[in-house]
Length: 352
Image (cartoon, rainbow, N blue to C red; front, side, top):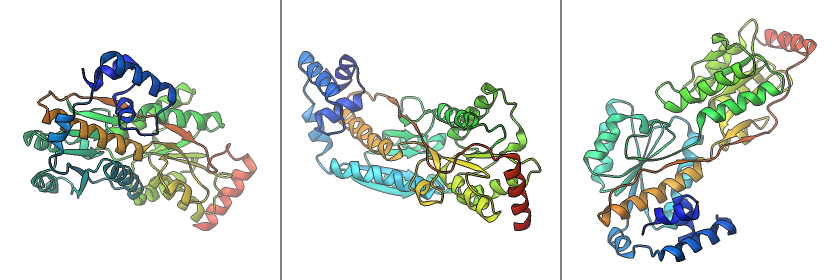
């Protein structure tokens, strides 16, 4: 019997079973009881021999990153470091350059002797990076892609549904012209969020306007450029939805520079719910993606994969969907009245 059998019988995720076994507090009492009953019924016992083999020396796992968002990266590192500390795992963090620098960074990480690697977006979408780790027989867990490599465990949120929900919220406030700053075109999450935004418009009876969608790259600077383009339109949007918090914060900065009040003159929302969302003014309404929790779970998945490998068991690919939440703060509201729109237009014209 394995932990996966226990999870199936208890009707919970494998991660929940692992948390119960390790005595972690973040499990409801009802689920803890179901897991305990399943363990008794199956006469399951953790494979300590495999764990001992895997921990003959301190387990090392790697985290390879190139995400341009400092706020996202800080959440990612926080979760990974906390879980590694709790499990006595050594975390090796390596920055990966783009394109030509990818192979160098991967080979440098492989040379450290890591037992497994966490690949967050956008690196998890690179077939070449995945191939290099597979050639070295190193287990991988991906974060943030809806197209994980075959036979690879992954953790993500439903980016399509999350963007659809936020856009629907804006429509519910009365907005009909909703600008969108998209994410990096190389990341699958970007296309999913854009599709969710577009589908929500159509579901709300609004014909998508290509002029209201601008290309961003998940960076603060690209958010500045995107907001400048949207707010220079003759018929500019009454709301802007940015595909991450960095770009949303940049849009708020542009609005302030133009003399626009957020949210009285312009609603602005983001995605991720990083610390940046509460350090800007006004605090930003956003989609909460539990990045730190996802990183913690990735560490646990990876440690289990190393144990399976040490025990000679075949790898198991698990695709876990983390929950998202709309977090309502002070940057969203109904569209401005015709008079306030006229005053806002006058203020922004003077600002130029």
